Image (cartoon, rainbow, N blue to C red):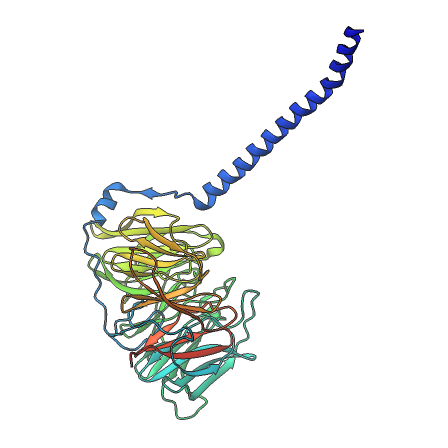
Amino acid sequence: MGVSIDRQESSATGPARRGWAQGIQLAVIMVLGVVFVALTLYHLVFKDESLIDAQRLSALRDQDLASKRQASADWPQWRGPNRDGVSTAKEKLTAWPESGPPRLWEQPVGKGYGTLAVAAGRAYLLMQDGPNESVVCWDARTGTELWRFSYLADYRNAYGDGPRATPSVDGDRVYTVGATGVMLCLKTHPKTPQGEQVWRHDLLAEFGAANLTWGVSFSPLVANGLVYINPGGRGGNSMAAVDKLTGKLRWSAGDDQAGYSSPVLATIAGRPQVVFFTAAGLVGVTPDTGAILWRFPWETSYGANVATPIIAGDYVFISSGYNRGCAVVHIEVSGDELVARRVYENKNMRNHFSSSVLYKDHVYGCNEALLTCLEFRTGIVKWKQRGFEKGSLLIADGRLVILGEDGKLGLAAATPAGYHLQATFQVADGRCWSVPALANGLLYVRAESKVLCFDLRIK
């Protein structure tokens, strides 16, 4: 009888033990699967996959990166007087109350993502205006509309309608580029409130270029009597320069599809040049002829090289989103030529659409949805902070003026020692994808449906 009982117990517990063992195996497999997925995500998204040239990195640590900036209280073009997002005016910013700094004026606007240019007491914006694009000019201190020039251009996109670029003011003329490639030269002081056109180009048609996924986005650069543009056509029609007075083509060069970035002028390795950030990478060209001096390949998903390059001495900082990352490139003399060599590359800064700002050897920008401080000389992150999502920023008086994509405006210290928020308030609701402009102590913020002007001056 005893043997019979033992056999019954054995036959009863055998399947249970097998089921228990199978359960353990399944649990182990599931845990291993979770670990594998986590490691894969970490490898793809979070891991610092640095590429470093040790010798060039060591040399960078001893270089003088100070840049000569043209001082101006105005903000006459994309990213300010020097196209770098740094105010050179003698601002003295202080923390504002919870209700925000004093608001001087507010005006309704059409759609678009360009920001304002402010010069000689006038503020300019390019926006969607029904079936038209319109260049609007306001009195910079009162918001009174002075004139509005409109032309047929109805750009629609699932990620936002309207023009993307910022006007450039040069003397008595203002230059604009719309989302469909319409480029205008207008008078800043026209005789009628309908504005006054000097010349016009239809860039896509004239340079044989297709529009980009998210529309023509570069802001024109005016210098040396020319206007530098990136229409993105093939067969030597990628980059170009036209006479600023007549609009006549002076040169065109390259075959790259256009990026979404804006060109910058600099003297690098002892040679004046215009730096373009196309869909294929960085390109340096001579300002007067467009002869290509050097190239640095940098491809990103969807050709989305958007952020403006930062020039520091003979070094160029670039950054792109879609998990592409950032790099510092050294422009070197090699015989009679210039060559671009990577110093470092990593994923510690990934500018999706906004541009970073360099201040006292540190880069501040939105690393996707993380406000980040990065040491320029090493590529090492000093701090990260959530709260502004994919926002934008400028620097004035040693402070970050940050506009979050949800409309939150913040003031923080521009220091690698840590994130120190000094003031914040909700300036607008809805998507804010435009960098603020700061001129003569007044801050101009463009939201989805309105422009606001705030007084940051100390009373």
